[in-house]
Length: 197
Image (spheres, rainbow, N blue to C red):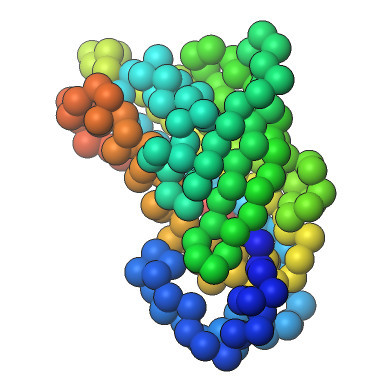
């Protein structure tokens, strides 16, 4: 996300409608030394097949339709199972665009890496899909990892505040999109383990 000049000038007012939370600008601009790098890893059993989840996660050009905070998503320079994706993300009054290099390994993995240097020093989104329960074909295990490092301390402060909320909403959005495309799952999702740092 981009911290615009207009937002910086309003740092004493509350920022609202971010995951249903409201905070005061002074909470964001506490310029203490914090780690700029964050990582979240999760393994989950869900009631959709490997192919179905790959279908949803690899559909980057339509992220703007179902992924929270993604305003636009455009795929270009496609070559085989690789392509570049331009995304505009944010929530008013924050906004930013970045380009990711996406590599597909059908139907087992979707990996997105950003090193464009504007907002992130580094951004990785990695989805891996493996078979789930033997007696339930419409199930799979998802290994999801997001790791990033902001160039800006301001962006890092925002991530520290809203990281859990945003990760939860994004994961939920992919499962909801799978439900919209393929119907209700035969089993409930089960988190096998997770870690954040």
